[in-house]
Length: 406
Image (cartoon, rainbow, N blue to C red; front, side, top):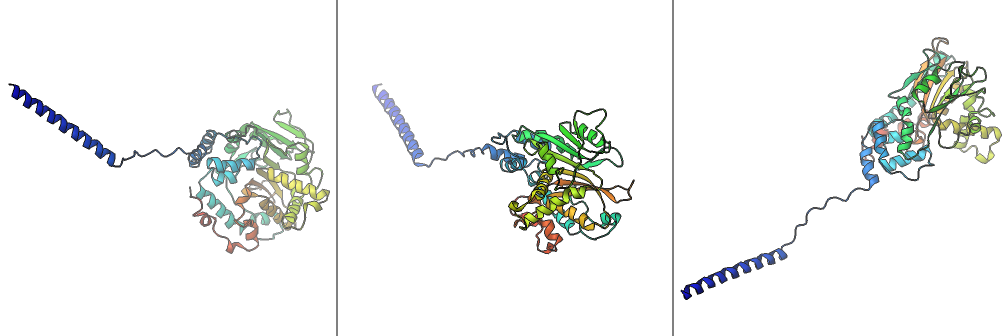
């Protein structure tokens, strides 16, 4: 009996010892075997890059602004529109169309470079003839080189209505500035020439109630009854070098600084439009080409340069051009000046009701200077008009490899 118990005890001891040896061997093998690390999740993107990736893929303006509003913007309360567009590109991946159009157009990169290609093709066909009659001049020269997807005609039927680029986008301008951290925004509209017809201003106010409208006309009367959104001035827009120039009017109204944004400039002043702007184009070109220095300008030239700067603050220019007999040089100079000031033509409407086509409504949209220039700083439209189109690369091909197409 005692022997059996001894054998049982010995067996249990042996089993226990073997189990302990096996456990020790297993642990020793774990220490020698390299440990397999669980894959770490990628570090979270900084907030700016994360938002940029998501916002850059949005091509509907209102959704894009909602996306931008999620970003924490700092230090932009006093920034002008150009600075805001630069920050939008850096911080939220705003596409080139958004930046070049000052927040009015939002579309994929590929579409925008094809718009630029269209501008280049049209530049070679803009200045065709020196016809001496209005009908022939406007028929054969200076066609639209841009298009607005949601352009809209505001005002009464026939003579008096004006085409405005993408009114819906203008309606979103306050949201745009808030989304980009610029809470202060003031929309102003200048309307030169009324002839007691305020239908354009009334329709514009219906669509853009946040805009304040300034009407200038010394030959008509204020609206009756008065409209609280219209400020009427018995004042004419005169030559670019005069004390009633566009630049002087902007100065007198204290509209140079932010948050004032001149969204629409309407001009219908019966043959006075050339004097109002040609002098500004002339002085700007003299300075740009090095034939004049700022320190050399007299009072009239300084006023003309101020007019050029005021014009470039306008985002849209809606103007009725009246052809002057035997003045084709003035006609071409006007369009070349607008092009070199940074404006594209998005609409052209001849007035055939009263003038047989010698008066034409043109609508211009201001774009950022980079839209018009190549990597060497040359103005593409001016280069093409002087016969240099063969050396210019296609903008979409030049863009390949630098920025992914949308």
